[in-house]
Length: 571
Image 1 (cartoon, rainbow, N blue to C red):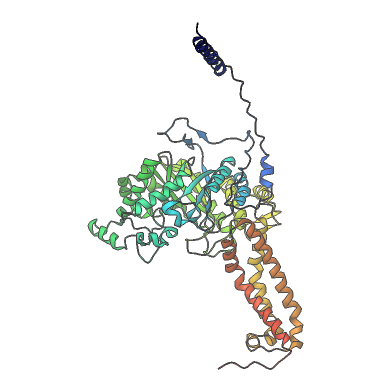
Image 2: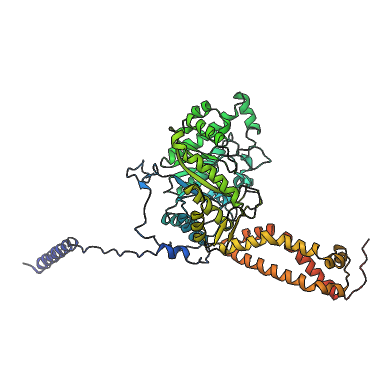
């Protein structure tokens, strides 16, 4: 055998040995993987923990999972729906959604981390989240974003916080009326029903429906586990008044109801096609004007449920049941109700009128309790406790969420027990850290120990005393009225002998109010973004405190003039 053949044979032997070794390596038995359990924090520690001051647009670690022994009330059906996520079964659950209206005073993520456990403890099992411009829209919709809009990471964290606290998230996306946050922009101005009003969308413009579909898609794509989508559709002001609508009405016998339903059909059909796992909700007020036959003919009752909203403490049960009967005859399979725990008394309400909202919920409780016996073909699915932060995108702020927590707590208890008796009253007060809750006077005794309790106490002081005390000081003190009037200040003169007599009272009051409002500002900044803090202070503090500040500034300047002659008015 030649040397070359020997070398070639040796190479073949080496390759054979290498091949056998590789086969043995890949066929070797693998050791079992060891998965370490993650220790959950106690829910009490999670709830009562202090708020973490952090930027809301930074990536943050998700909160800890709750203890495994917590009861799960909602079952999940295992069948898949055309590639969609498993559908949750809520057929035996009555939902209680707390409405978070984020078109004003949207809280930082850290406050959600504190408040969600409390909402769950109070009996809520869901959230109705109305993002408006706080949603992280992208692409063609990026112009809709507020400068303080949540990031995609924030949305994931909100959903995770809701999940671990057993709160089902229902996004609310306006699709017809209340489109101000969209139609205010020049880019979409041409889609207004009336050119001068940003309220309602023109249903006939070829670009309107694609815009709504885009908005819905971006929101729902970031809410893959949500079981419902609320399409709004309330208060479609000026519908039928635009030129396109007038032309349509001329060709359709002036049927405004048909115009409304035709557009809603398109929205409902789109959602049913693209997101068949999402159950649809809509406000009912526009449906109240329509006939049973027209609603039946539209077919929307097969895919959407009306949310019958009444916020009045004088809810008429007979009229309400008439509407329920109408929706039953129209073919709706289920119905929701909507009450209010805040934001439904006056547009600029600072302090929540708890008694008003309790009465509203007591009436709704009566309606809810009679549903099974009176209405057999329409199922009561749940109630949304609305907490409006603005009446619309352009209005001032209503009551802040921390100020309304006692009202929310009491309203949830009323839905649970019907009567807010002494036992329930004490339990609710104890949970919130109060000694007592007085519904009749809309006050609570004690400092409170819930997230935002400091804001509750400070706003109460401002609501009760600021305007009154400033007026009493400047208008009720004879020496200020007699020796330091507006005329004195305008002409820059005064008698130091008299001015020194009210000096201490004036300067002390100013110092105390500046200290209190600075404390409030600090607390607000821990929960809210700068624009909210500025707006709330400007609307509720500055109109009164600025007057006091001006008087103090004039006092200090005129006292230094040492009783000089009156300044002459310039001609």
